[in-house]
Length: 152
Image (cartoon, rainbow, N blue to C red; front, top):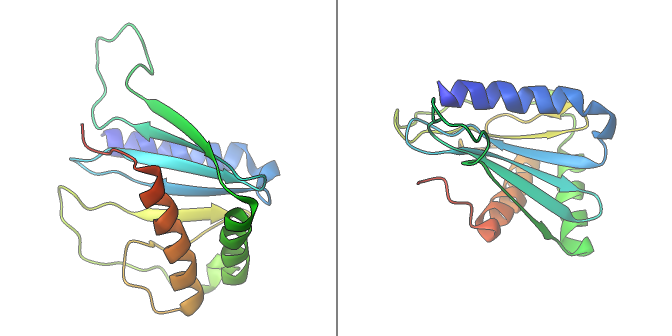
């Protein structure tokens, strides 16, 4: 249930902030039964913010959001430009057929990038198009550098 709520929340934030679509790349990991999901926002100025949604929500908690973590860093302009350039070269994302692959029921997640009002196919599945492969490479490097903890 937490995964569905997180996906709905991510879609809501994507729609609400559509006026900045050319200036923000959003990386959305759905999470799974056993892992937390997260949303990473990369702005054109290199500011990176990410929020991790906990796997389980405390029903009787009196302090909402106490288990949600948000962090931020500043990327170099060069690295930021490389990521935006890869996203722009892969546009329009609608040209790609949806990609599905076999995943673990407990640990399988989806990974999408939204940019300029469009969403990529699942970047955690095997990719064939070189533009998506290139974008995925930059996205996975960024995710690795952020050391996002999805267990716990």
